[in-house]
Structure formats: structure tokens, C-alpha cells
Amino acid sequence: MAKQEKYLRSKDVAHILDCSPDDVIVLARKGLLKAVKQGRFWRYRMADVQAYKKRIESQAAKPN
Image (tube, rainbow, N blue to C red; front, side, top):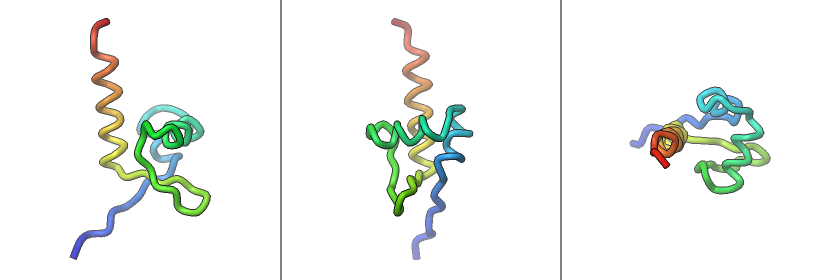
């Protein structure tokens, strides 16, 4: 039996990414951050948030 995964709220993701919850929702709407819409709320998997954060950090570390 698979373990049910806990989903994070926009507020929780904003804390992890050090941005506002509104910015997190914009990322989800643009498809940059994987998310699931539950009713009128967006929900995020921790693995997807960590993958996004790692991707952003690696882009910031690249020299131009």
C-alpha cells in the first residue's frame, strides 16, 4: 500500500523559497513549479518544490 503524500500550501512553499505566497501561485500558473489545484487552492509536493529550488540555484550559479 502506497503512503499518502502530504501536500504543502502556497504559504509553506513561500517560506521554503523565500518569496511571497502570491509569487508561488504565479509560478504554478505559469507551469514553472508543479502544482495541483484542489478546489480554489494550489497544493505542492515537497519533491517538486525541492526540484524547483535546486533548478533555480543551479541557474543562478552559472556564469554568463
